[in-house]
Length: 88
Image (cartoon, rainbow, N blue to C red; front, side, top):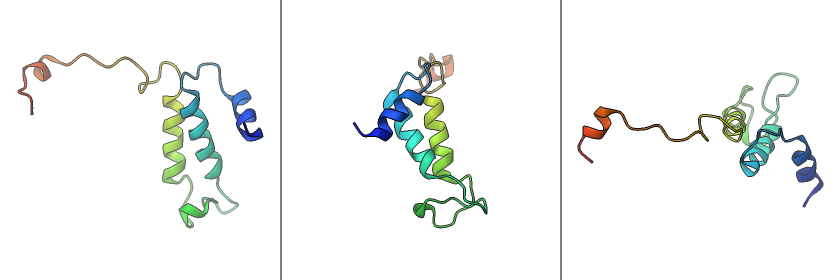
């Protein structure tokens, strides 16, 4: 395991239920930080204003990796309309 992965594991909040998603999202967020002019410093963004789309998506992943987030919550039961709708 690389040192950066070890460091990230010690920085991971205790409420994280998906460590892999957390680690990957944190790596993307770390790579897409703003420079002095508030432009994303990642070469893959080619000068995009910060926060860039990749940083925003990483934030969604960080939220989803936490316990109780909408992405990890139990699926909602279908409404009556959805139960009565014919299958496509």
